[in-house]
Image (cartoon, rainbow, N blue to C red; front, top):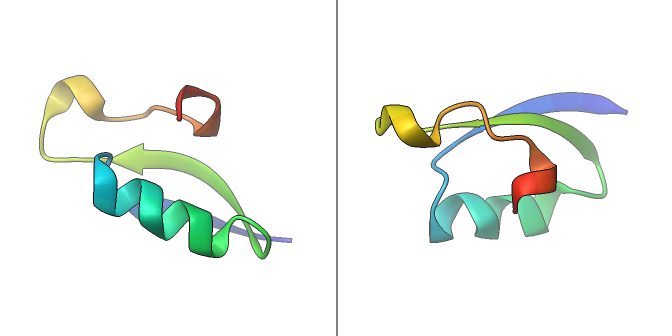
Length: 44
């Protein structure tokens, strides 16, 4: 399985995750808000 990092941790990031979760192991979500950087998929 390929790995990925998603930029955007709000609705857009969650939407992207729902579209790619079967093909990619999403490692992290990154965002311009430092409080949101690094959350793994368990935080969705």
